[in-house]
Image (cartoon, rainbow, N blue to C red; front, side, top):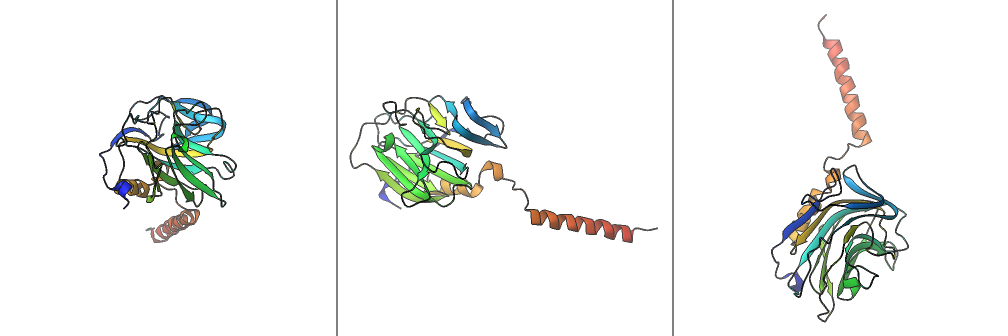
Length: 251
């Protein structure tokens, strides 16, 4: 474990979104929906341009303190064929000079082809960390923890590492609204796909907690649909049982 992970501060769940009924958090954060975004099938389904759910600022501010940590974790499944030419912001809050969010967790094309997930603190000025994503068309779990100038990243339960500047840059305040599905500005950053189990913590998660979230899976797939082959097998067994019962039934 790296030095950046040596001391794990206590963490508290601030907001949780399971999208079982609406886009509000269990703690009462109200969502304003814009464009083609809706709660459907237990997920936040984001489709098309200018589609997002917006909230008052929910990510705790790191006011003057590199020891102030916060974490965002979520499940995401990007629609294949989208987001191949630009950044696809899954969650972001705050705006720097009207351009980019103070914080963003996004998917984007990687230099060597394919896609990568990126956690950015202060638009990359104070810290960033990225990792390749094998297939954005399936569910993946992402968690990013940030302090004043440090970014920690987990992908599918695995700790990727930390990134950050070698200097103590000005404190990120994260004042402004938070969005799910699009960058907090008019410069793009549109995500297309499904989001589930979005959680915001004050403090930093540890490896064990992140791994447990990954193993639990997204809530939408907690009870997976049986495969067609299994359904056919079950149907055949049921039919055989009925035929046997008829043959053995007393006259």
